[in-house]
Length: 203
Image (cartoon, rainbow, N blue to C red):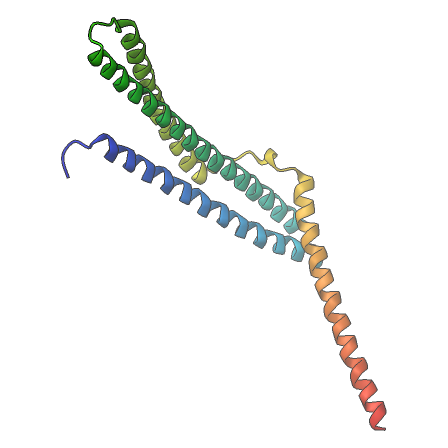
């Protein structure tokens, strides 16, 4: 590999880093979902045994986990939006460069025509497009660092998730568990009734 990388090589390397960061955030989101499931089960168990202290502890942990997950989702969305903006900027730059080439060809074809003003306008457009690309690179690098540091940061805003949301998550799990247990009891009663009916017929 040469000492100096081409523009395309730098672009590909940058895109690989960004996509790697996105995959890391997606993995973290899935991990937070697993943590939330475990905390909900623990909260349900603490409620069943009447351990209010453990219930409050797990409840707070679940609230923090939900806040972390929401923050990661926001960061992932920000990176995706930044990538779209970068693609738009690249398309605009390509358009400006193509029009500049066309202006030069016209100038060569009609050499006697004064296209100084037109050339100046297109040169300005190209300069603006190049400046936009540089700003986009800085922006994407900043977003990447923010996303990666956010995934490992312990200081999260727990106020992103309300207490009511946490209670609904726990209660939904409790209700689902109770319904499942009731369904099992109904099935057991049905089987017993069938066996009793079969016994009476034999008698």
